[in-house]
Length: 508
Figure (cartoon, rainbow, N blue to C red):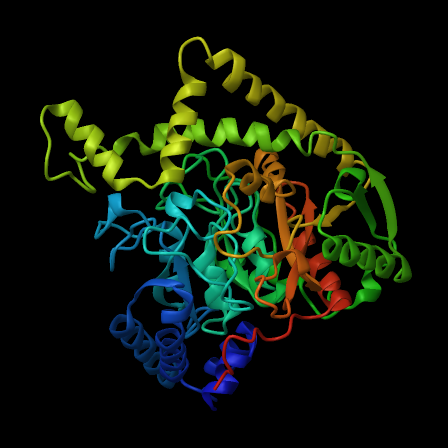
C-alpha cells in the first residue's frame, strides 16, 4: 500500500489493514515519520520525533502479527502526544524553557495504556506553554501554524496535536483540555476533538495546569476514530485520586453503522441555548443555522434551553484555573528540577531569576492572577465566589439536560485568526466562551467539523483573497455519557459531512 493510501485512510481502516497484514506497521510508521519531518519546519507541530524507538516498536508489532499473537486494538497505529504528558523516553517540557530537557522518570497512565494496546507513540507535540493559551502562540519554541492557512493559528493549547492530524501526518494525537484546549483547536483545524467527563481518563502523568479542570482526550479525523482511542484510555486508575469508578461502557460499539445514519437523529431532543445565537462571526452563525435546519429535516426536536451563565463562565474560569495553576507551578523554583539561573544572589534572588527566565509572559500573568485571588483579603471575594458560581453552572446544565439529550452550539465564536492578530488577553480568553463551562461543570463534550466559512475580517491586507476556514460545532452531554454522546456525534458527522483534506501539502 502506498504512503498516500496509508496517510489518507482513517485510523480504524489503518488499524484493520495492519491487523490483516495488508500493510506493515513499519511502513505506516515510516510514512508518518517521513511526512512529519517534511512538514514540521513549516508547521512547528512537533518538539521531538522519536523515529528510532517508533520503528523498533513497529517492527515488534509486525513480528507478533506474523506469529499470530494477539495484539491490541491500536496495534501499529502511529499516535502523537502532547508535550505535557509524561514519558520515560524523550523529554517532557510543556513547551516551556523552565522544563527544557526535563526527563520524566515514569510514563503517564495513558501512555502505558496506549502502548499496551499496540499504538506507536512517535513524537511529542508543541503546545501553548503549560497549556495556557488559545492559539499555540505561547509555545517557548515558537508558534504552531494551521495547515489550512499557515499564517493562522491552529488553536490551543493542543496546537501541535491539532496541526499534526489536520496535516495528515498521523491519524490521532492526544491533547489536554482545561477550558477548551482540545475542542477549540479541533474547530480551527477541521477535526473531531473529544473532552471526556472529568475523572473518566486518568490524569496520572499529566503535568497539572488546573487540577479540577484538566482532562485528556483525542484529536482525530472521525468520531469513530476518537471513540476507539478514548476506549483504550478510559477507565479507573488507582494512581489518580480523582479517577472515577463508573463503568466506561462501550464507546466503540456505540459508533456502529446504525448510529452513523442521520436517520437515527429522529426524535432526538437537541438543546439550543439562546446565549449561543449572538455575538459570533457571520460564518459561524450561518453554519450553526444550517445545522439546526438539517436537524429539523431529519426529525430531531430543537428545544430552547437557557444557559445564562455562559459568559460568566469565562470570569469564573479565569479565577479558578489561575488559582490552581499558581499552586501547581510553585514547584518550579530552580532548585529541585527545571531551569536554574546562572546568576543569583540569595535564595529569594535564585527563585525570582529562575522563574522569570523560565516562564513566558502568559504563564507569569496567570500565576500572578492566581496568587492574587488566593491571597488574604481577596480569597472570599474572588476564589470562594468563583466556586459558588461553579456550583450554579453545574446546576444550570442539570436543568438544561432535564429537557434535552444533548446541547448543540458553536465550539468557538470565530474561525482561526492570524498569528499575532489578537494582542489583548481578554479578547483571547473569549475564544473559550463556549467551551470553559463544560470543564467547570465536569461534563463531556465533543467538537465536530461544521463546514467552511470565509473570514474576510482576517484578511492579510495585501490584496490576497481570504481562504475558506473550518468552523466547529460542539455537542455537550451529561457526565459519563460518552458512549451516547459519541453515538449522536456519529449521526451528526454523517449529516454535516466529513472535512476535506487540508491544503498544506498533497498526501503521498
